[in-house]
Image (tube, rainbow, N blue to C red; front, side, top):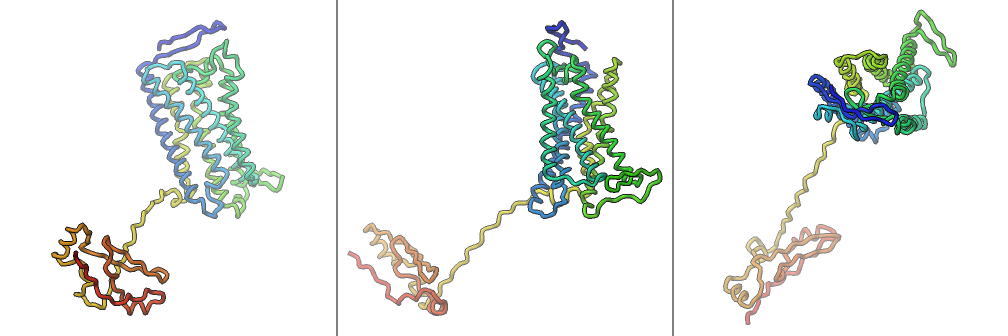
Length: 424
């Protein structure tokens, strides 16, 4: 592995590029593939949740998952998984170049990786605390608490990401984000920032989740009894606690959401051991680094898998794509005209003159239609007659019996003889 460095004002060297070996290209490629799969899983689940929320927007059921507070926290956790997947997918550029190069893309990858680490840690902790309050303390949070938690959580995450580049003396000691091992992250000069602005949140999330999960487990098992503000611990378990009956649906969802903090704790253990060994000055094999990173990148896949394995969190009919149908036009009924003059009368004929008379009229420039169509429509007791180009010679006779039987109908036209046109 060859490197390219540049001197800094404080006399140290800043890493500008670092090449990959064939083995390293293969290992980083595996991480890119896992990240692509994770991104697909997370985006698919977010789409299903959004579709479920849209299809149940008019439902009066307040216990739907999409209307619980934990749903908003879970969506925030999935957004952190998206940041994590995109940050790792950027490794495809280094695989293509067979080297990690410092630049704008390297900085963007460092920001995304820190944002993903902090956001997944924060929202994992929020889910654990919310579940603890609901199951252990039996406290139901308000709508104000939900919005306050969401706003404070995301603003706090943004503040942590901005704090490093804004507060540290990067002009003399180098940029905050740079090449770190086989990809870009917080620069190697900022070891304290790596711990305080990234690792600390991850380890605190795992620790808090483990403690809260243990307390909830002991309460459900019957070893811990809560009576008002009094908490009693017993070595011999009592009757299992099942919570309030009127919140049974919320309690079921909360119990199922306990799996996510537990899964997060398991996923970060390998990468935590690998990174602390690196901090201690020990050389971590490349295979161990790739394995621990791959396990950590499975976070999105694991979260989606746990969600889909959880029964009836989303009603099956709520995330189906609606089928839009275009109705066919209704056929227009044909109106039959009954005539008192018989089938062979002039009024039922085509309305044409004899060929000799018609030829003479055409020679005079008169437009005589071979067929004169006359129709009658009854609307609010009024008759509308449609005339041909030359003029209907006489309106089609309307059946007298029908007109007399229908109130407000058109009176029958008086019988008149068809006028014969005199030729000049």
